[in-house]
Amino acid sequence: MRICHYNDNRAGAVIGNQVYPIGDALLKAGHLPPRYSMIEVIETLANEPAAMTCARDALRSGQSRPLSSVRLHAPITNPPAIWAAAANYKDHQAEMKDKVGPYDWSSFSKDDLMAEFFLKPSSSIIGPGAPVVLPRISKHVDFECELCAVIGKTARHVTEEHALDYVFGYTICWDFSQRDPWGKSRHNTRNIRKGFDTFTGIGPWIVTRDEIDDPQDLAIRVEQNGKLVMTAHTGDMICGLRDHIRFLSDVLTLRPGVLITTGTPAGVSQLAEGDRLQGSIEKIGEMEIEVRAEK
Image (cartoon, rainbow, N blue to C red; front, side, top):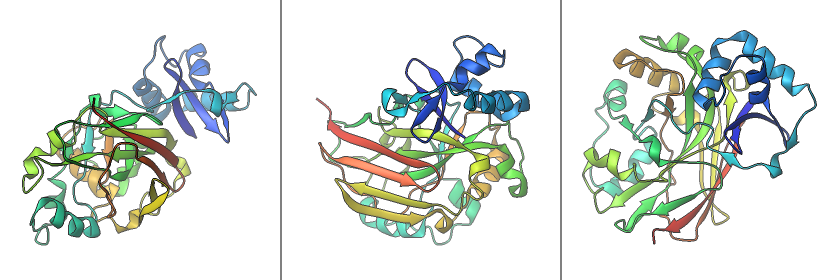
């Protein structure tokens, strides 16, 4: 199921080019409170089988509206945390040496690399079609396009074998990064350089875990102004999502709605005002972003 957040804080499910109001059905059946949040939708669907049955029944009701007639928002706007993996593809490690200076990952174990996870603020989230704004202070901003997992069940000390049991679904994350003036050879500035308003694009919806057999078997593709700039495969990650969930859940409690974004492949490019990005991940969908300069 493709779970979307649309119009005036409503939860829907996308099938083809139609949106079904599953939030209304869940509310009517008592599974959600009035003025529910998308975190409550995620937690309810992930943990209450009767709620998922109710949502699936709503898809058979025939009540829907064209996708083109609604305004999609980020499928979650207030996650408890956004954990972002760093340098998780070898080809991206190589290209970053030119952008941020010499940095040797070759001696890192998987856990050493995952200790480089950083946090992004929820205030940086934008949804489909919204613009990323290039800050006045920045001379160089790149895009990164990544597979992002949405946690559905509270997770602590989870093994890799059972890690995906705690995932509600998957979405696309655009991780925008300021490289200059604070990026060169200064890795402890990630939270700031990647935390500007509009620097986290999430969407276009969340695809539930049952529709993706293996998160390490998905193709990623990005076009910048109609030109292909990134083609990659999630199987090339150094640390897979199962590694990430095991590592993070050994350090802290992962709660429903937490986002884990898994790092970008190579092909990141500098952005300029007026650019248009279109990114897609196999079995999830595509998401467009436009680029504006701060006035």
